[in-house]
Image 1: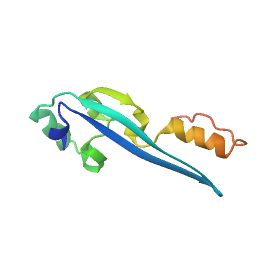
Image 2: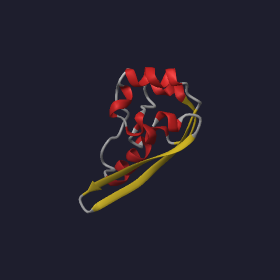
Image 3: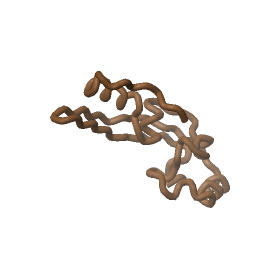
Length: 105
């Protein structure tokens, strides 16, 4: 998979659906990720580290594979796996009485 991504762009889609009683909000987050050309030694080292083994697409953009990414167009958090901005919008719409504030790491 990493060989196929090397030196190319690909699209990442992440679905999100929030239900509150009878109300529903849904969306699909999209981003285009461009990888630089990867050497066989880089791919082997990344795989040997185990990071890609539980990742859709065989990489985690928030981890060591960030060094492979030449560019991204779209929502970074959709690539990570949760379109956070859209989630916050949906929660404000569906539960305006709730206080939504950034968490602490």
